[in-house]
Length: 334
Image (cartoon, rainbow, N blue to C red; front, side, top):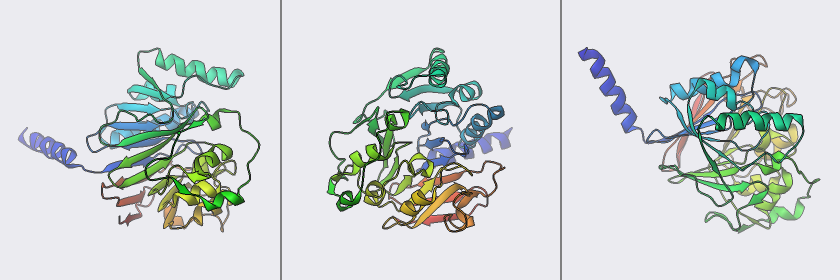
């Protein structure tokens, strides 16, 4: 009994002593599920991956949450109403408690699949979970970190963040694409600040909406960590926004056959000041010339175990990235 009490005391002391923001990039094979755990143990999950597949994505999220010491998820941010982001919400809610949901309002798309996604999401909300609908400029109610909404429902923040506002010379060479009127363009994008550390996640925001954030001045400014927009698809990630953020490290949440396009990969990998790009999957279409070194790829095979990538960030701005497949780890000083 004394041994058990001692172990519990040590465990609680270790938890209390944690002073990092931990970010878990969970493999949903081309969707998104990004779990953040603050020093005080508060949690924010950004999206819940795909439904089905015998609960594959929900199980992976629940496993990561339990590993992080969580008994529930405080906030689940649904960036937009697509299958690979909101589709996994009902599966997750059956396996792991979620206290509150954040979204941009109702689904803006119509049709059988969109209506089914909306119905399934509303059914989870109807169980009594708290719901928070946000707009650009809102700051989420988390204690240890600042989570600022920079895009939502096709709108952006009205003025640059304090770290932004720089004239962007790259805008002159950018061309706009066909207008996107679907849910990708409605994505909630957030900038997360922990001391001197800055992390940006723009979900599946598409090309023109990103240009609106980057031109003629960059509304976000420099960041330490960038989750590549839209899984590294050509529909997103113009040079004006990516290079304008000058990320020190980027993580691509691609699947083996989704995302990781050669064009998007080149833009990210050539960003000024980028020290490393990490990938959740080896991109089959990328081939030998458009994938990073194997040590920085979490899953090398298409049929995989779903290894993730973890980041442990300090208030100083320093952080460590770890590939959970091989435990390859690298620290990036402030």
